Length: 220
Image 1: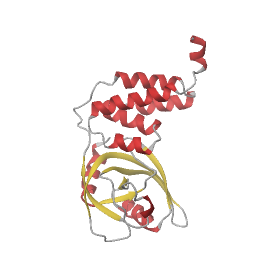
Image 2: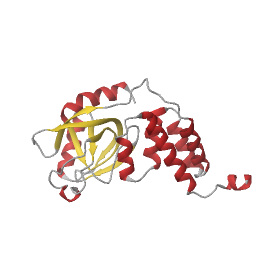
Image 3: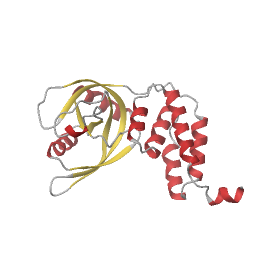
Image 4: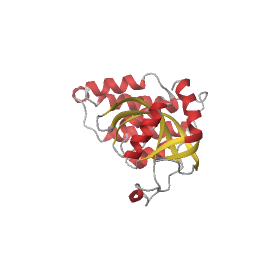
């Protein structure tokens, strides 16, 4: 993650625009496509684009999902994202891709002052000096790539080739883990070595349920 984006995120965290969306958990280094149609979130995106391009994705506490039209209680862990690309439609809706920048811990919600919610948050990025060994994760990733179509495997290899340790675990999880609860568990896992091991285990479980590729079938 570039120091410029992390710097923007640090500044934004003091008064952070937040988008609660239970079906989506953004992870650092990952990306999610969003279609923004509600007026309050169109205002959020417009304000973000006019400033730093940063806002956070949030989860709501269990049992609060039906209160999204109001102000449901938020889970304590967020992921700050930066708008990578966007398109505004003639009717004011937005299509965009939000890329994950950093984990953050919710400190407090700020008083309502507009259409959308804002919070004070504390960034919790991985320690850049803490890069645990990740051979098990890389081996699991190679096994996964071997069982995916060539174009999918090539893309996965490309997006994971320039990262290691915690960032590698986040990028792999973002690409292959769909379960919302599991993604949130990994978002709040601050022990980088444990996160790397857990994602390796997740990938191996995924591989175990996949059919052998033609190449692997010939080798057996």
